[in-house]
Length: 96
Image (cartoon, rainbow, N blue to C red; front, side, top):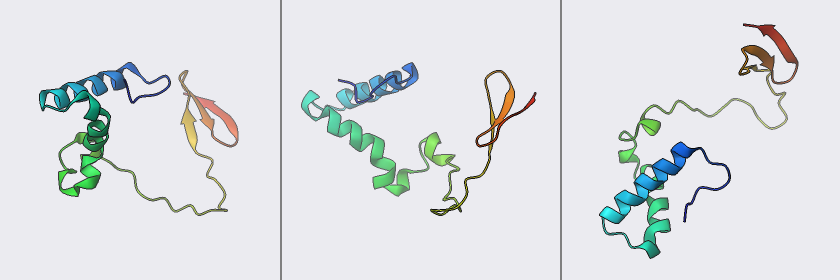
């Protein structure tokens, strides 16, 4: 049973399969596998001293934003697959 839901990219299914293999190699039973997967994935939050180990945590650059409820949303630029710059609120701009 995969914990992934919906149309998950195949890379995530591969990662989940590797995580399950690791847990089985460490003796985790099939009955405990779902709980062990959750614990494995939350380990760096449960034990912050482990946060420097996985790359996705080591290079995490997300920070709390400055927007508050009721603030106007910024009109951020987005790049489409064909190279066109679109703005989130105002629409198309220029072609790169």
